[in-house]
Length: 448
Image (cartoon, rainbow, N blue to C red; front, top):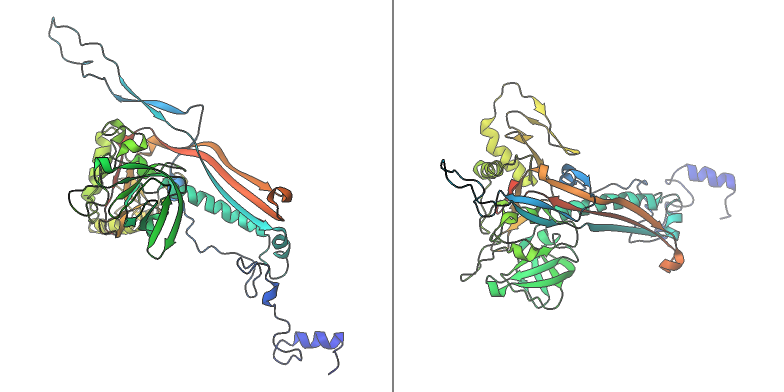
């Protein structure tokens, strides 16, 4: 058969693929147009839009007030009215005056942390992504996604758990459930505790984290030996301080005891805080690694402790599992007299729509309830991952201090990269700060 003329070519191609003399595959895009099969920069079926299949919500980050860092590396806190309890007292008519005393002043050191996110694309992919079937501006797409990932990373750091029972280990590794492995970050300093004071040792930075099935293996520097039943406590963060670090008590049992008389008690001295004194004063309701259901009494105790210490709860933070449990607890209080839906603003976030009678929650005792998928979960003695924790916070004393707002840097120096690539960098410098530990509380060891 002779080659068709141009007019015959157009006529046949416009008929579709049913009677074309060129066959059904002639006009379809082939797989060899793909620049990088791993990234799928060409798409033979769908359009250019890249849809998200990830949870990018960052509710805790959005709810906490953000302030300018200021010219300080810390501050002082008056933690007691006097040192020796002699500053004020009743006196008789001719009795001597109280002994002069001074306020008890504590110091808090706070330095900014840096979080960074990178992305890049080859020069070839930047060009070919603009062609028919490509995803469009690949740099703009990756920049947008990197921004989402950057804030999500900060939110995960702000809500990361601080202590977990390990299910196995060795001279430089330990295993934890995969569901909680993201709480350990590269550079975090981890201590091991085998249940006795002499058994606790400080470790150096986490070097790598790998997941396989239901268990994650965390590699640390030589010198820290972990065994099944130990705890891996994060006593120094490479990134932002977690709210779980702030709302912590000295001696809280993590995961319970797996044998003998060993008790895995959290030790605040490893995080630089003086055990048993003012900065270990947050209220923590734990249950030694044994699962229990959320109750209104547990929540009320947190509120009571905060108010007793002179604060006022401004936010209840929990996971979606505890959110629905709290809703079911309050269903008995539902009254069907004018169901008025309303929402409460918390920072730049808003609660779910709720009614003033408690069904589909927005507040409890006037305190906004904000569910966040990143809230830390507890782990039971048998290594089972339990439900998410519940935090009751007075946000008047919490802030994200920003030393440098998020910066974007782009680099097209091919010689420096030794490759024809365009690279982008996002970084933020700041830290989560708390100025009153007494007015924060949390509930742990809850069932899922």
